[in-house]
Image 1 (spheres, rainbow, N blue to C red):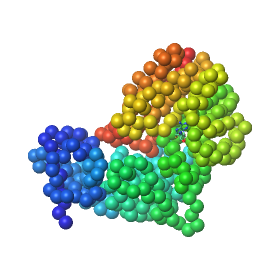
Image 2 (image 1 turned 180 degrees about the horizontal axis):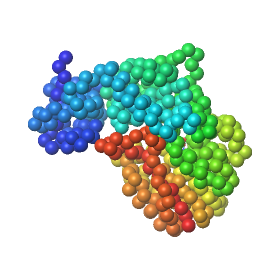
Image 3 (image 1 turned 120 degrees about the vertical axis):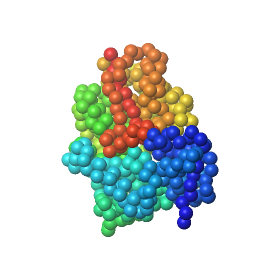
Length: 398
Ligand code: SAH
């Protein structure tokens, strides 16, 4: 079958020539045929120069995602195998991921690993896959085969992210390559701490691996402090703080399921008596703590994505400002605030401005004494700034 050629409008080839892997619907002039969703097409400039091979997505604003800028590449199962092999090989070279530090890591980080729309996390002998684009959906069996073959692990699919709807894809969840007697939850370890990961009922793929190094930094700062961990999920930061000899830890989340696992994780790490897990809406609970004149020496704010895309940026900015303002008021003098945003629609510059505004309104003087980003197994392709979604500031209240 002849490959469909997709012609861009004049001047709309610039981002592609800089290596950005997305082609938006508004940049497209015409196509030589009617490609199916997931089909490989050749993208060409208005002048007819072939620029890239990309996966077509008929219903998404991101109409095509680049497989390769070398237009003689063959996009087939062998290509998928080779890309996954390269992604895994990179991880074996990262000292942060030595088996003594952890047995849980991100194996594939989407566009930044040359695999648009594919997220893969490994938890001990389970590999969890999220397929988020029509192009990757087309190669799903090759993805599962490659992962099973190359890791020896059982493979579970968690393609239940909302963004699949934008690609016209239904939700798909379940075991796709299973070794004998498989149970779909795994005990993992991270810098000496034990966590239980429920790949079936947990959020996303089951655990937030991107915060691994940041949890270590919080552990190093926690000694003797009264700690408040907001949006604690299964206890990542809370248990790191307890392991770092915090005086006390109060951890809040709205999900009872997450808190159940968090309490079990505290038992596993023999620090249940120093950590209190409470089900609460953080927005309301921070007000309640302020009204009770509570004070903390170290606060972690790790909220969910308030702005997945730029369209929700304004509302998200108000939400970030609200919780940061309240957190700054709850800080004792000399206290620290570790404040995160994983919103693609809020970049590092805007996030800093939001926190500056929160400090003014809270009437506290504050200094940035550190920056946070995602762990090294979440690489960011230089041409793809969207991959740099996690940012954080460490704020000191003098
Ligand atoms: N810090 C965690 C990850 C946090 S993910 C870790 O290191 O593992 C964000 C968490 O926020 C989720 O567990 C979700 O249940 C919780 N959440 C979302 N909205 C909330 C709200 N309004 N109040 C409290 N928790 C909320």
